[in-house]
Amino acid sequence: MAGDQQLSLLLDSAVRFPLPNGLRFSYGTSGFRSDGSVLASTVHRSGIVAALRSLKTRSTAGLVITASHNPVCDNGVKIADPDGSMMDQSWEPFANAIANAPDPNSLAQLVLQFAKDEKIPLGGAQSAEVLLARDTRPTGEALLEAAKQGISSIIGAVAIDMGVLTTPELHWMVRNWNKGTRATESDYFAQISKSFRSLMELAPNENLNLNAVEKKLIVDGANGVGGAKLEEIKKNIIGLEIDVRNTGKEGEGLLNEGCGADFVQKEKFAPSGFCSDDLGIRCASLDGDADRLVFFRLIPNTNNKIELVDGDKILSLFAIFIQEQLSLLEELPARLGVIQTAYANGAATDYLRNLGLEVIFTPTGVKYLHEKALEYDIGLYFEANGHGTVLFSKEFLSQLELVNSELTSKMPGSEKQRAASRLVAVTQLINQAVGDALSGLFLVEAILHNKGWSFQKWCDLYQDLPSRQLKVKVADRTAIETADAETRVVKPSALQELIDTETAKYTHGRCFVRPSGTEDVVRIYAEAATQDSADSLANSVAQHVN
Ligand code: 16G
Ligand code: ZN
Image 1 (tube, rainbow, N blue to C red):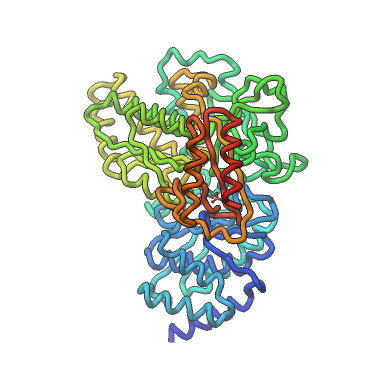
Image 2 (cartoon, rainbow, N blue to C red):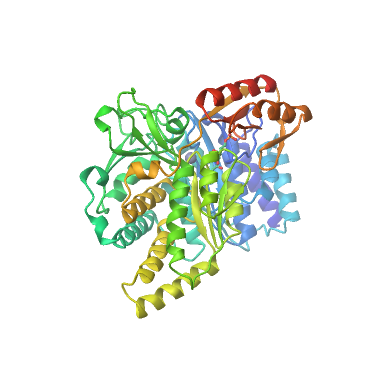
């Protein structure tokens, strides 16, 4: 009986969201992405997947509608698992299958069969709960409705609309709901401002007299959702003057157009809305859904060229700070792991290894880095593009709490006690569900303040090796297969030998090619001792890819 009811519910719902003719959808590196106007069926079906994920895990799942740094006409959808991370990869084939089911009937059959195989109880005995959010894209509202209808086509499943949020906010909420607190956006804001204040107050006293320039930060919000959220958070921030630009308000420009972290990192130019008046001031840039963060400063007399501090350098700053606090706490042993991808600048990797840290590589894509970071007591990960965070294991967190409360009662005010309290503040400030530009930004600021470092000092940690990225359109990007965290091509077999031969011609040469996970192109990355040689290495390898 329940089976029949479920079947007809699915059929009725699916009829309203037909698959567009001739299109195929694939759950890529960061969910489904496409032009926003063709995504209704995909988002509806993703709603079904999220509801099933909730039933399977007997927990709250999440779904967010965003296309991150892509143009405003694009949109996308991704699903969050109960711990706030990206949906388990083992479910991607199912997500792909149902996204491409040609008609309501085959869609319903796929769902019923999958539920049977996965032993997911359908029929309402158990309820499912999915938190929903979207970014500011104009297609978002209609797509959100499609997601809601997908969710309610599973008996007993409830969609809870959390509104317009950054991607990391939604992931954070899912994580917290499953810990038993029905956390809202104001809890998120409060947690950031409170832990930021704690960390600022733990700075050595001599750092309290920073000059006006060092206290100022200008933030490019990519005309996306992050700028408005930052405006809210900053109302409760003391000790830092934040000027938010590109907030998406009327007249400020289009989402991600000539602005945002992806633009700034790739083009190495200041975003629109910045000019020579901003010389000397520390600036940061978020991407369209605020899960990427980079810092920069304008270079004088260069027509808005910038000095870039990318994800690698943010990672280095976090690593130094955490390592420093741990070094004061011998009673708190911790295995630290630093996770990067092949895009990490070679100078950054050398720098981190010279600090005595264990550096590990994974393929591109947050889900791979995140998974690896979970293997450590403290796992720090960042992609050069500015997506990253710090994860703390449960065991480490409870040890830290113990050590901190013991030191607070026995040695209050001591350097050791302050180190433990700093670590506690870091664990509360950083978003442990996923990379988060807003919480990352405040952690950077609080660390610079604690260390009494200028922006220049941070830049000078190491000198990036010159690099060049190119993309080549090919007939079939899947013809290229890679191994060893994308650092080597294994198919076609002759290509790697050609890359090796080219690379060997350059001092500090390093080069790899990989098929993009989000676009129909093959990407080439080259690094060498000079910009000319990095350019020439990338170009010559591109010839072989063509
Ligand atoms: C997505 C990924 C990002 C990755 C990028 C690579 C997430 C949340 N985002 O934006 O981590 O760096 O794709 O794109 O996983 P590509 O495969 O086209 O080079
Ligand atoms: Zn993003």
